Length: 222
Image (tube, rainbow, N blue to C red):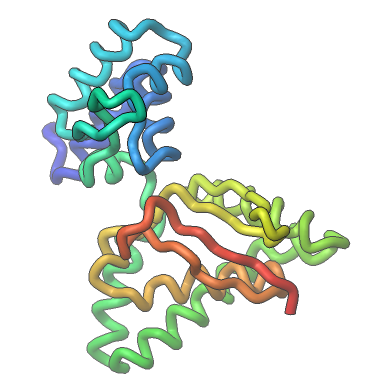
């Protein structure tokens, strides 16, 4: 039976990719500003020719886009990055549910009611995972565990420490990007989810649906 919609089609396509092609897509997911052929070949540990073949196949499927960019040597370099359809290949665990939730709550309770409900939903989701976090005896350990939990939920999350010593969680995948692009209140779910688990203040420093290369969350103790 043929896939019922475009998303099903892309998921079926993903299942037919080779391990190299899946690794290539994953690399581009974590480098949202783009990668050159040489950079991808180094990450995948394959030749430039093999890398170009994979890029051509994925470009024909409209999963990858490219553009010429200036380089230090003066000669433009072609950078490759995921298209909007390429991003849809990755898991969107909450997308369908959030779409129904948002439409119903907004019509029933207005914009502020929607924001309050999304904040409460984030706290409720946190309760499921709090036993894994609450006993940890440092904020650093909690941040690491919360990043692991977010990975299980599809966020492709990592942690980092900034030059001034601040802690951040970096999400390379937004599990409801299409919805969030039309409804900015959806980000309240993420913020309240993390704040409830970390018992710390979380600020949204960068957002994919507002033009960022990732979702970057700064964390400070309360």
